[in-house]
Image (cartoon, rainbow, N blue to C red; front, side):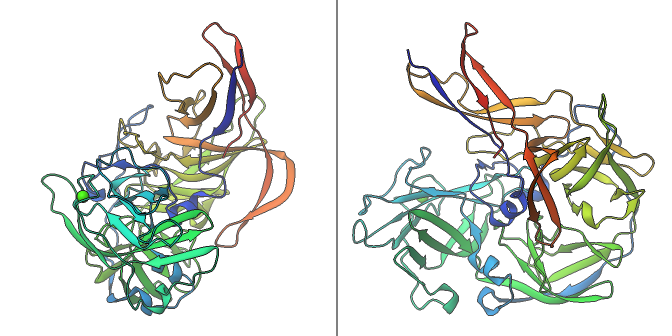
Length: 487
Ligand SMILES: [Ca+2]
């Protein structure tokens, strides 16, 4: 009897990938959001450890308000303009129909594309948002080019009752297709719909440009807002050009935590409004009105707390935070920009979870990343903001001694025929941090390579430590064994 199992991967955001992933909103699973919009997300639940009193940050100095004018997204020509001109990428697009869709139109192509876009995606429960299905067809039949865009405008999971969009006539130069034999590009007509926040909540009218690109056989769809907000702001002594965008996820409101903010000419590692900026040693928070007409810059004058890493047990004598970002309900903090005390970062007092962290414990470098919600995932509880930074005592990060192993595939109770191949994917989840372990590296084994972050910082790469996995059947017989790499 043939028994085979494919030892696949530990599902994670790759070590180099999370920030790019945030920018690109790569197609990871999302879940229909039926509760409140971002601003009314569930409150923080106590961690599995102790419940600590919430941070009390005294009111700081008043913010300085700057006017932001509405301009065409195509009027800008900065190095980062192409990012927001492309807009929000769809979550997925491929040849597989979505099983939740009740009816698709009669397609002319024998290879229509099917996809899902997730709007108003949460930053703290990454992947959760409002899903909309779409499809693309070739009106002249297979091989003639994709020129029909179907979108579930009325949000009823039926794509036969919403009309169809054709390619935009006389598009602006940035949308003019640059087709080659291997790349097809199409910008469709404006798509207007009401973003459906669910029963009892006011819908938000939106006007977006759906964009399609087919590179070889790889389809990509994105949605660009035709306008952005532009202005000049001051961060301390620095005067900077600022552009507010909805390029990461479209919400209809610039007050959303996921609003994009592009400052100056230098590419930002994390161009988000809620990212705190350090100028001349002062941290600044930024916020905007829903319409985006005003942007407020406020210097942080509150307390800081020390963030350190536990040394671990046994012979391990040293632990430290190497790099990364913490995310709170209203803040994204780049640890690299925070002040230091005895080499340890000092973080504004508040409750956080790892967005992405690289920590050293002895000879190990451990990557921690926010856990992605996949299609079909239903969050069973609100996110845990387990990193509680307080002024009076240092926060010591200690990984749970026994992390959870969560199998993404196969599903529980899934049955297989004898001899069939089984793909196994798992997550290593630390319940205390509410984060996935995304990488393990042995720092005694250099690879001679480095990762360059968007801000130019370089990090050396080391040999990955791949967990060994053994799969047994119900009688304890080993059916597969091997390394299960991260990735
Ligand atoms: Ca519909």
